[in-house]
Length: 297
Image (cartoon, rainbow, N blue to C red; front, side, top):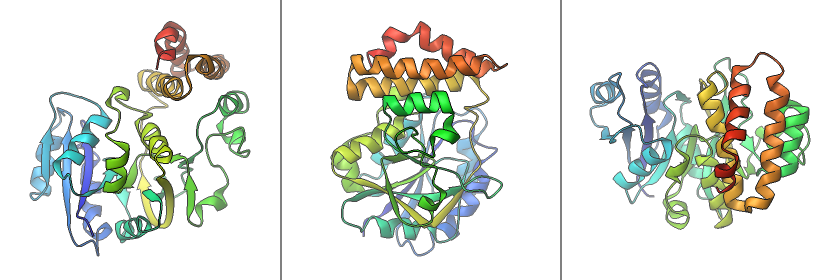
């Protein structure tokens, strides 16, 4: 069995890192050869020093500025080029024994990516599995809202059937907050696309893995808590998330079809801008102002 690189990309993550670091020994029980590798995107809060102090055996890779999540993942992968790669957000808390269960899934023929069952801070199931983006799904989520659209496979990108999370399941992509990738899959698919900086990079990688014949599999016996991000609260982050969806779709399907996808997302942001929502208004402005650039992919 290959060694394992436990990769964490940090950017001003000192407030949430201790909980992740504390969870690792029990989560990695039974994994014979692993090393924590941290790519720090020039944090200003001492994140790198915190890792060095609490995990002295960790390999810390300082980045030349805030280069984005994908760049950090690629730096971790390059640091241990013969290892499988476990990608973790700093705000993930792995349950005991979860990593060995994820590694077991990589032994299933055709599986290149394994993901745990995620829960939120309150312990409730996080709907982390996704279907490939389509124009119809984008319109479905814009008109119905994500929760209603998730009930229908044709209309929602989110896998909303909670029973789908009770057993092993294959999905087109999943939340990148915790993701184990085999070295064979990494070699076949290539590096994560650093042009996305943040958001859609895990979507792009998982879809390229699927194109190369590697499935993404949910391992319900492996569990993790995800504290959650700030994309829904920050106008800048939400705008980037929505914009990158258009860029990814344009790269995979061309400018013509991407125009319809852009229209679906713009409709959704416009409908939600009627309410006092700085995030959706900002995203709509970005979609309109950058339409030509986004459709170029």
